[in-house]
Each structure stands twice: as structure tokens, then as C-alpha cells.
Image 1 (cartoon, rainbow, N blue to C red):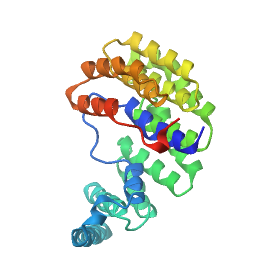
Image 2: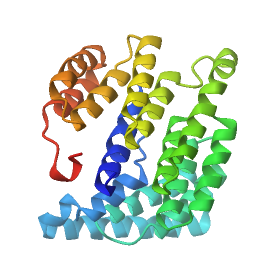
Image 3: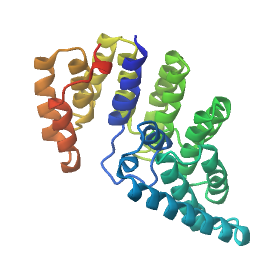
Length: 278
């Protein structure tokens, strides 16, 4: 498998597989900001507007830093500093190291907010500390085995290290825990979401029959869930099987909540770029 293809699978399929039917946290993923930075950031093309935005963000960050000297555990200020530094990062200003401190403090101040821990793990991976990233994610999954943000980050971490079997093992263990966990706390593990994520890992390794088997089982387990259909359609399209994918895209769009229909239709009609061609 080419590196570009594996990158497409990780960046697209893994994200689509865990779309939830609820609002997502306002805190964006580190990866999204790194990708914006790598692309030069759309604001970079605006000249003075970009310079003004950078200056404003730097001023905001300095203001938050001054407040933290007096109130080092102020969660709102830490979050403001984090968001300012993340936005600077998306504009090619600073480095991932700049977000480590506010994230570490946020994890300490509010350990129940899993999003902070997941962002910290992603940041640690970006600076090359994969061992610490895995440790943080394992800690989250020990108490919340069904947290999809943590699961996706752990799977991506394993795939980035060329360890697909480890990723598969983690997801299979999660599915094994699901019946008991959901009996104690209904809905604590999104079984269909985990199944689709597992299918995507197999697809990333060109084990298409196994991936389709898992997608089909997930669709059978919950016929009203659009995600297995969408995931399978995406893989079929990536294989060049456009006609086979079309009815799956249509069915997925029909089942999906309104906020996802446009995205499904867009992926159904878009043309894969040369870097994503099998």
C-alpha cells in the first residue's frame, strides 16, 4: 500500500466512522491544525488580513499568559490560551510544543474532560513522544473504553507506527467489553461506531472482504445507522467500483441526520485526487 493511500484512509475513513448524532466539542483536533499549517493556511493568502489576525492572536495569548501568572489553574483562561495557540499554529506561527503546557494543566484541572487528554496525546505524538501519547490514551480508555475520540486517536497512533494488528486488537477488545459495559451504562460503547472503525482498519490494509463483512454486520445490527453504509461506499468508490457504491451513498444519505447529508452527497460525487487513487 502506498503511503498516500494509507493517509487517505486514516484522514477520511477513520473520521467518518465515528460521526456522532450530537454536537461535537468546540475544541478542534491537533491534526486539523497541523494540516492547515502544512497547507499554508487559507488566511495566509490574504496578506494584511493574515498579519492582522496573527497579531491579534499573539496579543490574546500574551494576555492569557499574564492572567495565568496570577491564576495558574483558571480553566477558562487555559482554554483561551490553548485556542489562541492552536489558531496561531494553523497560521504557521509557533509549534506544537506551545500547546503542551495549557493542555497538561487542563488535564490536571479537569480530568473528567476527556477531550483535553485526547488533544494532549495528539500533541505528544506530533512532537514524537508516541510512548507518552499511548500512555495518555490508555489511561482514558481504562476508565472510558467507549470514548470514540480516544479510540480513534489510539487507532491512528498504531497505524502511524505500522501496527495495524495492535489497532485491530484494541478495537476487538472494546467490542468484547461492549455487552457488559452497555448493560451497566446503556450506550457507553457505540458498538456500530467501533465496528465501522474496525472495518476501516481492515480496509486500510487492503483486507476488503473482511472490511465489507464487518460493515455488513454493523448495518445488520442497526439498520437505521448510516455509518456502515457510508464507510462501505467510500471503500468501494476508492476501489473504482462506482456503480456498486452509488446505492450505498444514497441509502446512507437517506438514513443520515440532516447535518451529515450534504457531506455524504459530496463524497458520493467528488472525484478522488491522483494521490488517493488505488
